[in-house]
Length: 428
Image (tube, rainbow, N blue to C red; front, top):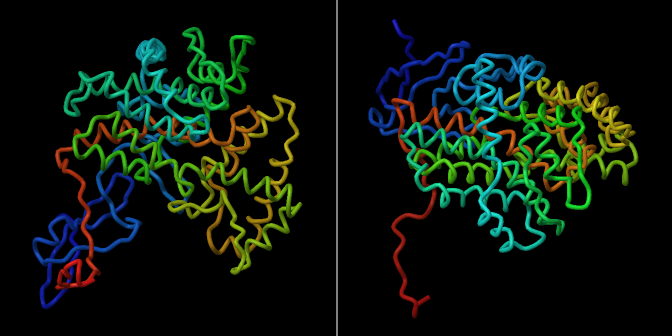
């Protein structure tokens, strides 16, 4: 017999179904609550609301577990490539070698953008943030592929997916080149996904750029770790926009805009700014920590704590190891890494933070790697978006294939004035 939950209200007793996921998570199904009782649920920020059933990503925040399609993130970080991980997320299984080779070739063959797209950049101010530019250009791709926009058409969707994965690095690199007044660099089919992005970022007509394989591998790793993270703000945005039957390009553009916020994808930039302020101001991690504990102080500890994780973010452990490897490879002694390591040690041994479950999250070390390989701070979040793209796509597709698919439409509790009369303008 299926489990039930009982709600008592106003003399009524209502039975509600209980759904259980494959990892043992349980949820009360309140989809019929309003019809039976007239009640809705109130959950600011949707912190305890399940908006869908999903087979893509599992997180156990208490134990610090993250899995893509059932595979632990640690295994994927060690053994998979980013495009292999993208295939897993989007199609639900790991590809065999011929499938992966074919997929990589298909993505590689679509990395160039239409020449008319390149002209879009001339309409933006030179100081335009790359996230704003990327969101606008990705949204505009819908005008170049009008025959690939039917959300219910598998062929349409797959054609759009390949183009998004292929062209996002080109669009992102172009946004950076435009901001610094350099000519765009065309992609090279002989290079792998991350090496290609790096050469589009750092090559120019006067100087060739040969990507370091260790640096390219570190970037590939960062993209894997950012590839999906359940129903976060930007993924929920992609689902909500897509639920209106908007095309994939429009939905992804909305996701980029959601990710831009400093409480979401922009957090890694805030971490670097915090570490720089410690280096240039307080001078020591210990002094900064003491300031951050004062309630009346505006100092904020960035890169610690997470809405879901109440334990060490498993992605942070992997990035920390990679961070040391990249800096060693490049021969860089980073004062910021030294401060970050010291800061982590202090926080993890301070009861004030331990009691609040403040552990390093994915943003804490990622910015140090980006900075070491020459990525400017305003491009950090663009790299996050590039990594998150497969997850957004996977959720968009899963939603449209869901038998319970409906347009997203949350409810509210109205708290405004009632029966207010209109006053003519000459009497106001």
